[in-house]
Length: 305
Length: 95
Image (cartoon, rainbow over the protein chains, first blue to last red):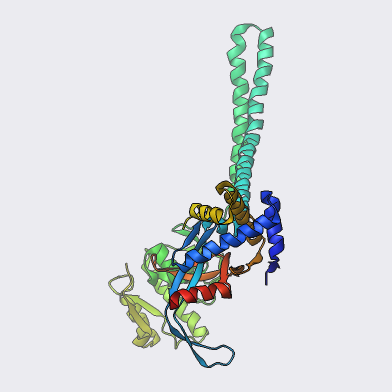
């Protein structure tokens, strides 16, 4: 429950604020609230700017329940006063709740500004030593040149500048080499592929070869690392072989078959044949006959080539 | 009835000038606003009570956008009329 305020304290505070006596304020408030009551009983609403409005509303007769006894109760048609608070009053009430959002905005903007400033200074600081290296020897040359005759000036300058440039280039090359060592292999065909979260071998096959039926190729190429084709680890790197060699695919299917046979997954129907794509020809049918695999295990999918 | 009309009527009834009545009304509004912003309830005899309630953060369905949205938590004013005020309104219905 909220804290209640006594009516006399209310009057005293108004009197101190406005500079009138307590009695006059009491009289005035009585008259003022009476006028609101009389006006609203006539059926007119009373609007006070920056505070709110008292609106009389008509309610129809309805059936209710007495909450104490639980028996039905007839509610007569009646008027009731609805107080609609203005936006100014609402904003004054919710000042505490709206404060943190504004402070957060300011904080975030400050952090972003700091980051930008930091990056700017960092860039300038990294560039400075290079400039210093270039500038300092030139000054020395100028000092030397003043003592020596004028025609020698360009030659000396060029030599020193070339030396400096060579040094800078060497440093850059070393940095690049270091970066290459740090950077891990990127997904390229043919090359390596980094496994992302919720990715399967068939999804990788679709991404790289454009057909999910090629996933056994990936499995056979990485047979040493992967034992179960249904389980590949996130963040691991897969070797991506060339798909143009058809013999490889045949071998890869055999690898997959062996892997499943070891784990007694034969009941699972894992063969995926793509209709309209000729990557599996007679070889596959021959293979099925050799191994006495029933054709039920071969599912024919309409894969997009 | 607007604020200006209220000031004039109250000034006539209480035998005060319009400027005086305006000063007093502004002061009362300021004081009530101060109380409500400090989350304190105020009862005025023969008129009613100003109370404050806090509504929690909740979901609601926006019909115009046909989308479920979040309404933030906020304070709102509830005004209850007194029993005498209620009786006067009831007399008006009976007449």
